[in-house]
Length: 399
Image (cartoon, rainbow, N blue to C red; front, side, top):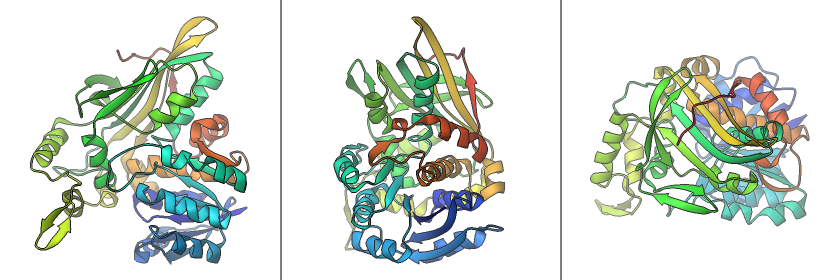
């Protein structure tokens, strides 16, 4: 049915490749491209028994012209961007120049400022619409599945949604004193930024990790959850009508917070360049180099993740609450695709979004966040592709 160019060769890309190859009737050919082609070859070599034709390429995704050249050589129907968020715009420009649909899992971030905003990508709406091309933003888990969960709830269970609390819990243990489950640079920028949530038409800011609650999560038990700002809040606050408040919470252990505080106190989480032995370096990039590579955590990580949305609103004039979530087992993910659950929960939805675009179910010219498409085919695919979801119509609510 189609060809996909997958840009990136980390843990998420590994999952995307394996899941595309499990759906070879849709993904007849794929090309894995990255700055380091040896990583692409390693992913290709890890795939067994597929009808999907796989090739690899070297590309610097910071350079639009290099991406354009590669697209013209491979001639894909869609580009799946699982590289760094700093590269979103150069890849979108390349897609516009070559007339190819686009999908990513995280919004654009300027390298020099830890901002999580969609404004740079939303500015491309008219360009993609005029070109007759589809751009799907944030087709990971959060953002991604959490947006689809919200749209599904709105379509099937509510007349109005007033409150959404997204809870992202990882009860996995990799055995290291300190490591991040995905790109350390992005992860630490996210956590050390100020918290923010949307309430009564405006954004409320909090100090980093200031708001802490305890929530008892199905299958993993009570966990400390901290309020963070996460990019899907920005799009959901606009796209789910009737929203009075939307928040995002993530779990961190005391040990993790302690390590993070020490690193922050000694300046290791800073993105301000410093001079070291005659060279300018970013402390955070140096920290990233000494921390374990998230892609190496797969064989070591045990336990489960639980990510979902606790939703409150009105149906037929009556108050209604609803909790929809997914449980993912780190070891089961590793057995299937050679990556742990953090990569799996991002990579599977990226493949699903691309599959729906190729099948024409999510094909509409313009730039869209996932909640702006019909959620039903995506929810159906989640159950088929390894991320089954569960529902609770009487959940414990967060105050």
